[in-house]
Amino acid sequence: MNEKMKAKHLSAGINAEQLAATFLTQQGLTLVEKNFRCPYGEIDLIMREAKTLVFVEVRLRSSTSFGGASMSITASKQQKLTRTAERYLQTHGNTDCRFDVILMQQIDINAVEWIKNAF
Image (cartoon, rainbow, N blue to C red; front, side, top):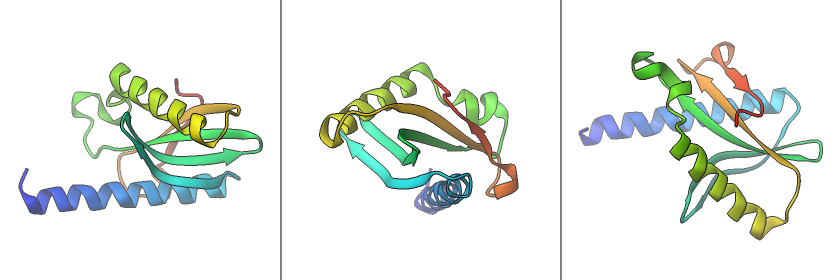
């Protein structure tokens, strides 16, 4: 992937994460943190719904080749997200939590698919 394609891909990812945060806020969740990183990986969005901390993975895939957005969240990716969430909870306090996924085929709030308790 050349530099121009990388920049476009990164920009699309940032836009997808912003749209997901807006969508979830409209559903009553509160944004806690974006792009939490640690040595294990990154969590796109950390939201709060009532007393539950919600770790959100955002996936944008314009093509359904290779299974589309939902198929891109492999067991390995789930393990990285889980370990990253454990690190977050260790440093920010243990609380009830869940893992949600936001899937999009395009950057359009009407095309957002929200899967609660995805794994």
